[in-house]
Image (cartoon, rainbow, N blue to C red; front, side, top):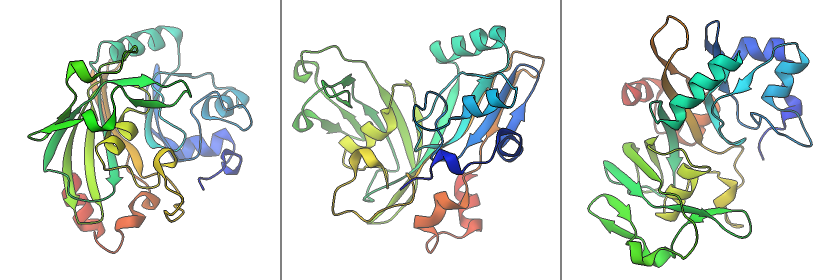
Length: 256
């Protein structure tokens, strides 16, 4: 099971541990898994922790509680408006790392599969699984096979950094930014992210975390910094499934 947010330190100490970039208008943190960005009903979350310590922050992008990595937070209303506009206009570059099961992904590929929200509230592909077609290294569904419900075009590009029969390490770029997009896209093409509770089978071994990490984010700073690219390095816990397969030197080479 993932860490409970109640195990995290108070904001001053947590802030010291996780802030990877900041200026007068914004902060980028390397969020640990198990901590929500905001809106946690029965526990704490990142925004609430900061507010309790007197720092008013607004989330610009959110990642799932089980996902670790870069989250952009605004310090002012003006900065929040400017930064969220960049996400809406898709001028922000986002790159994730994921460990998927099983291996066998192509060197590079594209997943062009619309999403919809099912009646249960879960996010799924807007077609039956059997309608998904792989054309070259692109997974897609023909328009006539879409379910007759409102759907949202969703596109993910990825590159396989390392591969074995059991696992793949991929660098994923969500062209669109839909809720659960990477998790659903990879699972529905047969390569679910290791440890993802949305796609865990009863017979799967219990994993301490979900192996999805928001690695890089690039955006135009509101202040004088111009175009900023921030790297949030994965914690050692992210590399655990590959610890006996990739040395730190090999990991650094793969990530460039």
